[in-house]
Length: 172
Image (cartoon, rainbow, N blue to C red; front, side, top):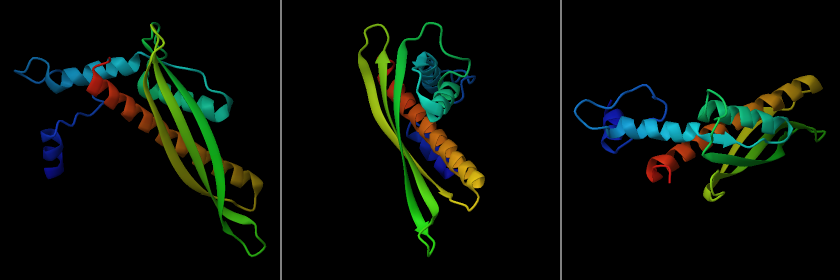
C-alpha cells in the first residue's frame, strides 16, 4: 500500500488504463496525459521484419501498441532490427551441451512519417535460458519457447520506452 502511495506521489501513471476518465475537478490531469500517450502509441505503424522471429516480434509489438490493427493514417513508423545469439552453458562429460542462453538484441528507431525524421532510438536486450535435451524435437520446442519469452520481454520493454518518450515529449 505504501509503495502505491509513493508511486502516485511521484507522478507514476500506468500506460494501460485507456478507459479511465480525467480525475474529478481537475481539467484533464494524469489520465488525459495517459490517453494522449496511448493515442500516440496507436498511431505507430510497425515496419515488416524478416524471418519467423521478426514476424513474431511484429505481432507482439502490434498487439501492444495498437491492438486494433495497423493505423490507417500512421504518424510514426517503428523500425526494429533483431540480432540473436545462443551460448551453450552446461556440458556433459562427453562435451555435449545441456543448457543454453538465447540472447536477442533489438535495435529500434521511431520515425515521423511526415518528414522522415528519427525522433527516438533505442536498444532492448533480453536473455532466456533453456534445456538442451536428448530428443531433438524436445530441444527445438524448448528453444522456441525461450525465443518467445525473450521476444515478449523485448516487446514489453519497447512499449514502455516509447510510452515514456511520448509521455515526456507530448508527441513531438
